[in-house]
Length: 319
Image (cartoon, rainbow, N blue to C red):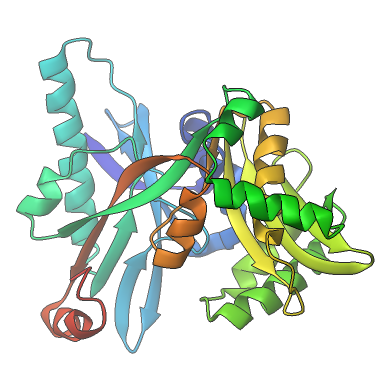
């Protein structure tokens, strides 16, 4: 097995049909040439898998991490094994080689999340990485909307009805890319969230189209109250960004936006709605009110000793 750097086009050609939108060339183009793609080869020519990461430098240290607004490192690999033991051995070999490759990068800090389908992290544990469970919420869109709504928290349904009584209206794709970019810059700033301005702008300028994403905006009269932006492939729709206007006083606006996003994802024939990470306590409670299934995924973290000691004070749950 050989692991070596490849170009984004080569990675995306093999990955998109397995990873979906976050393995597509168009999504990865958001990051220009800052992204490193690694191919997993059975031999010199046969590409059987791959993953990607972002390398940055800060305070003289090299950091290896996920690209902003991307939920995982896009790891995929194709096994030809039909025997379970052989399949387990192959998976272990792949994960071991991925771990070794990451270690050879000799980064001062590594923080990488993996797709939820990847569950074997023993090679990382054996090499002194911290393997941390994280969670997202998913809704099965193969059910009818009536069935999906029966799982909503009753309080959720109540505030949605109140918002509708307040004459809140919902509109699809009424904001252009530049307007969406400005809206989320403003709304995310008010919450104290990390904002990656270049990548955010690039999502709306280079990636977003009617074929891969949509926005849902709440208004009362001419006033914009809030917006949700989702990206999708043929199977899964991901809640990527959501925000409310500072002037919004009406309860239930965010709830109404999410409900319409779920409906729209279903109309687009997606089979899953993914809330794309649900680790913040307040955000988790809100997403949980829509009755989704809790799904774990894993992050591997490792830091050089001085940085690890510092991070133990700030990020004890991760280090």
